[in-house]
Image (cartoon, rainbow, N blue to C red):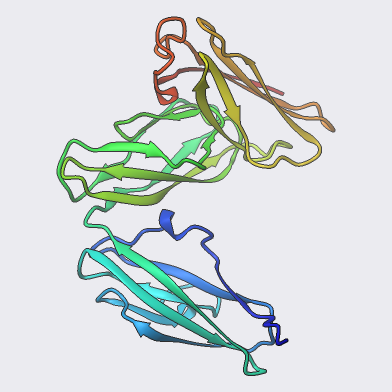
Length: 275
């Protein structure tokens, strides 16, 4: 039995949240795992969106490493299927079909700068499409501790921990067009022993549920409150240093006591930072 040691993977993890838009520069790195370097890459079937090519990203993106990937500004909206083949130095070959869907929507504002400890109210802006627009956090997305995303695309609150946050979102327009992309939040401030951790809030059985990405062993995250008529405290603690960040989400608009179906993105905020 012949066992292939080479596996093709995408560095973006989920290309759904790096969706290309018409007329906007876009890139998606590719990588091979296993096998023996160097690798050779080619498109063997299907076609790429007009304006997109398979290239060495270091030749088109300043500061990029020498890695293969797709790059370009798509000329048309639509769905394209392309088969990518990678061959290693031993002649092993792996192929994978990729679905590249180009959205007619695009964001002209997708990068927010947030001073730690200061109130933020930042609006994502769609440059194409038909208003009104609706914004949703991705099902597996996390928001910086202290921020909420409203259905109107407003990031509101106060970021507590400095760091670079990638927030996957979905945007829908009045015509049913969809864009799955990522907002970048650059939170800057004094150095801290706390990691840049996000949180996802939801409502189940009239109680707020908080979910977090995997935490380091020395870091704990705790939800306090969240029952009907209660606000929510999220407490992030470094067990080694004792440093804490506490985000308080008020229940003024969530109204758990009367409506359990309210969106957690409508939570209003009060923030405290414990040092």
